[in-house]
Every structure is written in structure tokens, then in C-alpha cells.
Image (tube, rainbow, N blue to C red; front, side):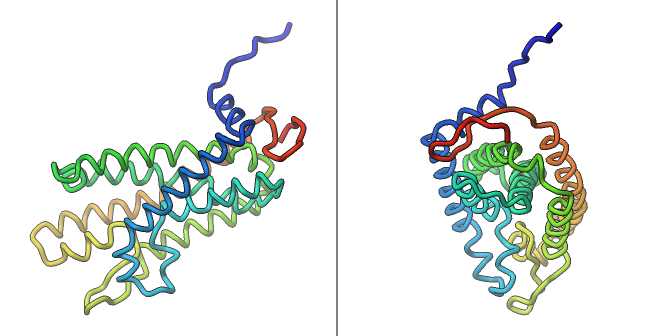
Length: 239
């Protein structure tokens, strides 16, 4: 006796987006806008950072930027498993990481003058984390080598963020997303509390690297359904 088909809203949404080029284009445009805003948000920190470290500064905008190309490659029928794995993990991990940071440092981000912007950032990063689902069907057959490379990349990024300081105006500065806050509060009475929180976030970030690689791997391996390939004239096929 056949079991009943269970309606899965996540798979339905993914199928609808890939089945309609207008929706796919909208997702891409959202990522273009998010990447542009992220570059603006990190601009001051980029200008304080040596150019050869720039790749490690804008964490969230980097992965929304990668998502633009991941979707373009999918539309062209190209398969780049390692790139897709890195993009999917980066979207989920740093989207969730930012949501956590906004709450954990709520005394700064949700002060009255910052509350509206921080609320918008929290919601937008929730969307960023969730859009990683659009890559799940395209990484379900990725080889273990792709996951190992992704793991090495995120460990390197965490190492660069927290353990590779550089000198700026005679003070040590790091590459993590809260580096400007750390730089400008050094020497203030509130700095020891901030420093303790930053140390906590360092360990949380390293833990999230392992957790989200495992999470995306498990989700992708359990992703089995048929959707319409986003390629002109393509037939429905299982991917």
C-alpha cells in the first residue's frame, strides 16, 4: 500500500523559483542589492585593511555575491560542486551568525538610534540563511572532496578573522566583522566586556563552522525530488 505524499513547502518553493525565470531573476537581484549594501556597510573597515586581506573582511556580502554566480552557473547548466557547497554553507552559517551577533551585542545594535537598522539586518540575514536551500538539490551529489575543501576554507576564514592581526595607526586590528567596534572601544572602560564577548564569538564561530557544514551536508544528502531545470528548453529531470 502506497504511503500518502507529504506536502513539503520548502521543496515547493524551490521548485517554483527554478521553474519560473522571473522568480529566479528576483532572487538574483536581491543578492545583487544585498552584496552592494554589504560592501557599503564594510567600506570603512575595508579602507582600514590592507588590500591583500580584503577577501576575508566582508563575510556576508561575499556569500550573497557568490550566490549570484552560483545561480548563473545553474542557469547555464554548469556544475561546480565545491563552489556551490561553499556558497550554501556560507549563506546559512553567516546569515545565522549575524542574527546571533545582533542579539548578543544587543546593547549596541538595538540601542534606540540603531534599532530600526538592526531589525532590518536581522530579517535580511534570516532570508540570507534560508536561501541556502536553493542550492541543496545541486550539492546532494557533491563528492566528499568538495566538503573537505569547504571545511578547510571556512577554518581558514575563521583563523584569518581572529588570529591574523595587522597594524593600523599604531594599534593592532583584526579582520572579523566587529573589528571596527573593537578598534574604537580599545582603552575605554567597556572594552573588557566587549573583549570577553568577542572571545566567546570566536569560539562560537569555530563551532558553527563544524555545525553548519554537517547540517548542510545532511540536508543535501536527504534532498530527493524532481524540479524543472532552469535552462531554456530543458525537460524535467531529477537533479
